[in-house]
Image (cartoon, rainbow, N blue to C red):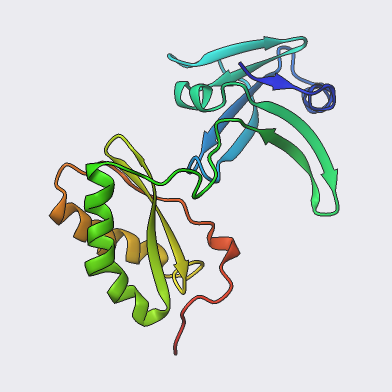
Length: 190
Protein backbone atom coordinates (compact mmCIF):
# COMPACT_ATOMS: atom_id res chain seq x y z
CA UNK A 1 0.00 0.00 0.00
CA UNK A 2 1.75 3.17 1.21
CA UNK A 3 5.06 3.31 3.08
CA UNK A 4 6.62 5.90 5.38
CA UNK A 5 10.31 6.44 5.94
CA UNK A 6 11.48 6.48 9.55
CA UNK A 7 11.96 10.27 9.35
CA UNK A 8 8.39 10.79 8.04
CA UNK A 9 7.01 8.60 10.84
CA UNK A 10 8.95 10.59 13.44
CA UNK A 11 7.60 13.88 12.10
CA UNK A 12 3.98 12.68 12.11
CA UNK A 13 4.34 11.52 15.71
CA UNK A 14 5.98 14.83 16.65
CA UNK A 15 3.15 16.85 15.06
CA UNK A 16 0.54 14.61 16.68
CA UNK A 17 1.95 14.60 20.23
CA UNK A 18 -1.23 16.01 21.79
CA UNK A 19 -3.57 13.65 19.95
CA UNK A 20 -4.75 10.58 21.80
CA UNK A 21 -5.26 8.53 18.62
CA UNK A 22 -3.44 10.41 15.85
CA UNK A 23 -4.98 10.24 12.40
CA UNK A 24 -3.58 11.80 9.24
CA UNK A 25 -5.78 12.30 6.19
CA UNK A 26 -3.90 12.29 2.89
CA UNK A 27 -5.62 13.47 -0.27
CA UNK A 28 -4.02 13.22 -3.71
CA UNK A 29 -5.36 15.80 -6.13
CA UNK A 30 -4.37 17.30 -9.43
CA UNK A 31 -3.44 15.58 -12.62
CA UNK A 32 -1.47 12.32 -12.70
CA UNK A 33 1.34 14.34 -14.31
CA UNK A 34 1.79 16.81 -11.44
CA UNK A 35 -0.04 15.41 -8.43
CA UNK A 36 -0.33 17.37 -5.23
CA UNK A 37 -0.71 15.83 -1.80
CA UNK A 38 -2.55 17.34 1.14
CA UNK A 39 -1.63 16.08 4.63
CA UNK A 40 -3.80 17.01 7.61
CA UNK A 41 -4.00 15.87 11.21
CA UNK A 42 -7.67 15.11 11.79
CA UNK A 43 -9.91 14.24 14.69
CA UNK A 44 -12.55 12.30 12.77
CA UNK A 45 -13.75 8.82 12.19
CA UNK A 46 -13.06 7.29 8.78
CA UNK A 47 -15.70 8.20 6.19
CA UNK A 48 -17.61 5.55 4.28
CA UNK A 49 -15.27 4.22 1.59
CA UNK A 50 -12.06 5.42 3.30
CA UNK A 51 -9.09 3.12 3.38
CA UNK A 52 -7.49 3.05 6.83
CA UNK A 53 -3.83 2.10 7.18
CA UNK A 54 -2.49 1.42 10.67
CA UNK A 55 1.06 2.38 11.49
CA UNK A 56 2.81 2.22 14.83
CA UNK A 57 1.39 5.18 16.73
CA UNK A 58 -0.97 6.63 14.08
CA UNK A 59 -3.48 5.90 11.34
CA UNK A 60 -3.60 7.13 7.76
CA UNK A 61 -7.01 7.86 6.21
CA UNK A 62 -7.26 7.83 2.42
CA UNK A 63 -10.36 8.37 0.29
CA UNK A 64 -10.86 5.62 -2.27
CA UNK A 65 -9.52 7.62 -5.23
CA UNK A 66 -6.38 8.76 -3.39
CA UNK A 67 -5.75 5.23 -2.09
CA UNK A 68 -5.81 3.78 -5.61
CA UNK A 69 -3.61 6.54 -7.02
CA UNK A 70 -1.07 6.23 -4.16
CA UNK A 71 -0.66 2.45 -4.24
CA UNK A 72 3.05 1.71 -3.67
CA UNK A 73 3.97 5.31 -2.79
CA UNK A 74 6.64 6.19 -0.22
CA UNK A 75 6.30 9.25 2.02
CA UNK A 76 9.46 10.93 3.30
CA UNK A 77 10.24 14.09 5.27
CA UNK A 78 12.67 16.39 3.47
CA UNK A 79 14.45 19.57 4.50
CA UNK A 80 16.13 21.93 2.07
CA UNK A 81 16.84 25.53 1.24
CA UNK A 82 13.22 26.08 0.13
CA UNK A 83 11.72 24.69 3.33
CA UNK A 84 10.70 21.36 4.73
CA UNK A 85 7.76 19.04 4.33
CA UNK A 86 6.50 15.68 3.26
CA UNK A 87 7.67 14.39 -0.10
CA UNK A 88 5.87 11.59 -1.93
CA UNK A 89 7.61 9.24 -4.36
CA UNK A 90 4.66 7.83 -6.26
CA UNK A 91 5.18 5.16 -8.92
CA UNK A 92 1.72 5.98 -10.31
CA UNK A 93 2.62 9.55 -11.28
CA UNK A 94 3.03 9.88 -15.03
CA UNK A 95 5.63 11.75 -17.03
CA UNK A 96 4.33 14.10 -19.72
CA UNK A 97 5.07 12.72 -23.16
CA UNK A 98 5.82 9.26 -21.75
CA UNK A 99 3.23 7.63 -24.02
CA UNK A 100 1.60 9.19 -27.06
CA UNK A 101 -2.20 9.03 -26.62
CA UNK A 102 -3.72 6.69 -29.21
CA UNK A 103 -7.17 5.65 -30.33
CA UNK A 104 -10.27 7.17 -31.86
CA UNK A 105 -10.86 9.76 -29.12
CA UNK A 106 -7.22 10.91 -29.23
CA UNK A 107 -7.40 11.28 -33.01
CA UNK A 108 -10.66 13.29 -32.83
CA UNK A 109 -9.28 15.60 -30.12
CA UNK A 110 -6.01 16.17 -32.01
CA UNK A 111 -7.91 17.04 -35.18
CA UNK A 112 -9.93 19.74 -33.36
CA UNK A 113 -6.83 21.08 -31.62
CA UNK A 114 -4.90 21.23 -34.91
CA UNK A 115 -7.65 22.73 -37.09
CA UNK A 116 -9.63 24.99 -34.74
CA UNK A 117 -7.92 25.59 -31.39
CA UNK A 118 -4.22 26.01 -32.11
CA UNK A 119 -4.66 28.42 -35.03
CA UNK A 120 -6.60 30.69 -32.63
CA UNK A 121 -4.20 30.54 -29.68
CA UNK A 122 -1.16 30.81 -31.96
CA UNK A 123 -2.00 34.50 -32.39
CA UNK A 124 -0.98 34.88 -28.73
CA UNK A 125 2.08 32.65 -29.01
CA UNK A 126 0.29 29.69 -27.45
CA UNK A 127 -0.38 26.06 -28.23
CA UNK A 128 -2.45 23.30 -26.67
CA UNK A 129 -1.51 19.61 -26.82
CA UNK A 130 -3.23 16.38 -25.92
CA UNK A 131 -1.03 14.53 -23.41
CA UNK A 132 -3.25 11.69 -22.17
CA UNK A 133 -6.59 9.95 -22.57
CA UNK A 134 -8.16 8.07 -19.67
CA UNK A 135 -11.41 6.44 -20.77
CA UNK A 136 -13.47 9.39 -22.03
CA UNK A 137 -11.44 11.97 -20.04
CA UNK A 138 -8.61 13.90 -21.66
CA UNK A 139 -5.60 15.79 -20.31
CA UNK A 140 -4.38 18.87 -22.14
CA UNK A 141 -1.14 20.78 -21.73
CA UNK A 142 -1.01 24.50 -22.50
CA UNK A 143 2.30 25.81 -23.80
CA UNK A 144 3.96 28.96 -25.07
CA UNK A 145 1.97 32.07 -24.25
CA UNK A 146 -0.82 29.99 -22.69
CA UNK A 147 1.40 28.46 -20.01
CA UNK A 148 1.15 30.64 -16.93
CA UNK A 149 -1.26 33.12 -18.55
CA UNK A 150 -3.87 34.52 -16.19
CA UNK A 151 -6.60 33.76 -18.72
CA UNK A 152 -5.58 30.12 -19.31
CA UNK A 153 -8.45 28.71 -17.24
CA UNK A 154 -11.00 30.83 -19.09
CA UNK A 155 -9.50 29.86 -22.46
CA UNK A 156 -9.62 26.20 -21.53
CA UNK A 157 -13.17 26.16 -20.08
CA UNK A 158 -15.02 28.67 -22.24
CA UNK A 159 -13.18 28.20 -25.51
CA UNK A 160 -11.33 24.92 -25.94
CA UNK A 161 -13.66 22.70 -23.90
CA UNK A 162 -16.76 24.07 -25.63
CA UNK A 163 -15.26 23.45 -29.10
CA UNK A 164 -14.34 19.91 -28.10
CA UNK A 165 -17.78 19.15 -26.61
CA UNK A 166 -19.57 20.43 -29.72
CA UNK A 167 -17.57 18.02 -31.87
CA UNK A 168 -17.36 15.15 -29.36
CA UNK A 169 -20.60 15.01 -27.32
CA UNK A 170 -19.54 11.89 -25.37
CA UNK A 171 -16.34 13.56 -24.10
CA UNK A 172 -15.71 13.13 -20.36
CA UNK A 173 -13.71 15.60 -18.32
CA UNK A 174 -11.27 18.02 -19.90
CA UNK A 175 -8.39 18.30 -17.44
CA UNK A 176 -5.45 20.72 -17.40
CA UNK A 177 -2.09 18.96 -16.93
CA UNK A 178 -0.07 22.17 -17.37
CA UNK A 179 2.58 23.29 -14.90
CA UNK A 180 1.51 26.94 -15.06
CA UNK A 181 4.12 28.03 -12.52
CA UNK A 182 6.83 27.11 -15.01
CA UNK A 183 5.52 29.48 -17.72
CA UNK A 184 8.14 32.05 -18.67
CA UNK A 185 6.47 34.23 -21.29
CA UNK A 186 2.68 34.34 -21.02
CA UNK A 187 0.89 36.64 -23.42
CA UNK A 188 -0.21 39.90 -21.88
CA UNK A 189 -1.01 43.18 -23.58
CA UNK A 190 -2.34 46.42 -22.07
